[in-house]
Image (cartoon, rainbow, N blue to C red; front, side, top):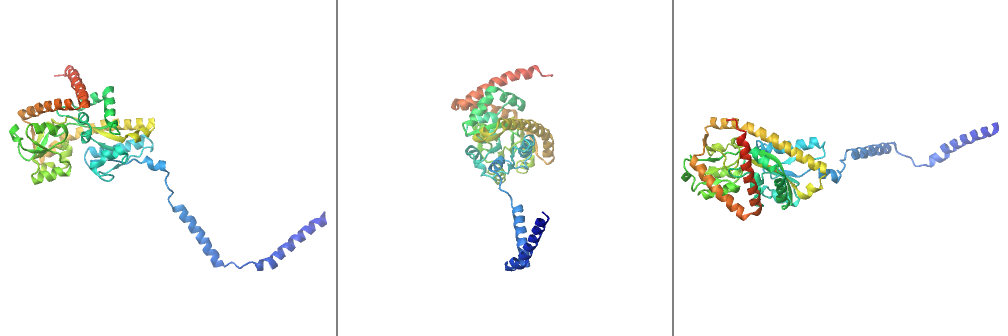
Length: 382
């Protein structure tokens, strides 16, 4: 055994010597410099690979919604409402719902947002139903109507199961799903370049106004114009417009409309309250899990109530600022309000005759308001 072990050791020693003296000299010589370059190249390739961004899975890309509206994020009330919705959704969904608000015109032209949502080019849009009233006259009743309900009355009406069903059906016919996601109080009644005393002072006056209100003013001899946004200011400055409607005092004052039309009239007969919708492409909505659908509804409900409280609190201060800047804040003359109301009653009858959906919702709203008035009356303290 001992001699066998010695033999193994001697064999190993001979193998090492042969490898060093015979085999090694026959191998090609490797440059030390080349070895260093090779090491650097390998290290660099690893570094590049580490820094290169990995492509995102399609599921992650689809989580980020294409979401926009017609109001800039800096516009009081309406702007913050859209960005607030984004924050709430990301928080309560724990990051599963990414709905960043994009500025108007950044995704599609402003006049194409509704058709883009319907087609799926956009996932969602945040705006008043009045903007889509040409799709269905009944949307005017949701967005806000002349001599219509107060904010709490409007919410009470919309909470009824049959109205919610009609609300969904109207939008589904347009391939979108609508969710009440904001609430606005009474608007200003109108801004004019000159003082208004009688109904005759309004006749022949060009006035920027939309929806059912445009039909009302036309019946008393005014010339309704569909100008909006920046067009209103150009129109007032050039003399093309004699007056205009925009929104609440806080928003109007922020836009400095009083510089061109210093006479502000109240109340806002054309809209005492209005809903702002989150419109979602119908296919997109139906593809969401029940949990995500409930999450969006809950976020919109919170957005609606918190936003309404905030904007109501802003109006008195806005009126004060307007008066300090020399604005003539006035109530409409009684005869003028009476003329508006008479015209509205005619328009309502005509719309009900021409549109089945309008007639159905209008009839329900009229009866609801009669019942609601009894409840209001019995709870009065004076």
